Length: 303
Image 1 (cartoon, rainbow, N blue to C red):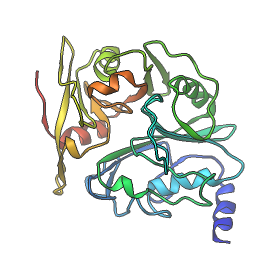
Image 2: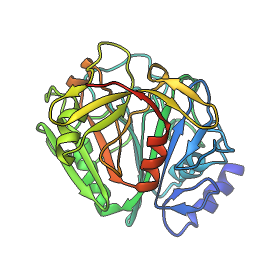
Image 3: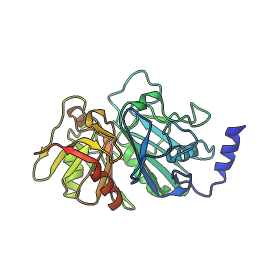
């Protein structure tokens, strides 16, 4: 009965949207989760959120995800490590996202969390993160967009051959090398598995003619800094002013900053094995977010 009332309430919302910490509609937000924790920082806040990512009823992620259980809406979930998977498929894109949309509006969540989310086909209500998400730092980005823009973006993402485990995406646009698509103030760059390069230094950096500092999952043989005319270096340590500090070994988020105020969040890690995986990077310019991310970078590699 409780779930029925929630769905009835959500069905009355005028339009889909990313929801902020209080459950109010917003155009976008970003979450950075700490390692060994389900605590996080919301957007450009200077203190940890008072909420927990394990919550199913409070905080920006829970409020946004509840909309996936509105019966009349279309949705799609993909993750290279789907919930409860017992075998890993190395042939699919190394990419994770969740989308929900109606005729007018779409909500897109791009994230780094394996086995997330458990969707409506499996669970009668949103159940939050699974236990595997606790160990490493992660990111989630939410964007509210027009459905027409989303469908164009979705054809590009479908071309990466992501592991869609619930719902469906439109017919794919074939990917050759790197393809970039702009919508609103955002630019999405996707690469195919056959384009054997680091997406950050070979696709994103040249597009913006910008140096990049990137943090990603650094387990296995590393790409190391890219020291051409444009440099892409690795963020080695994160440190927040409220005492949370960690090395990139404890990080599974994938984000970077370029020439002020360029910020990017992506799918692919800067390790050698990721060059043969498809994935995407989302970039935009945001002064406040840039300054917030720059302020927590404690140490980087050098050329």
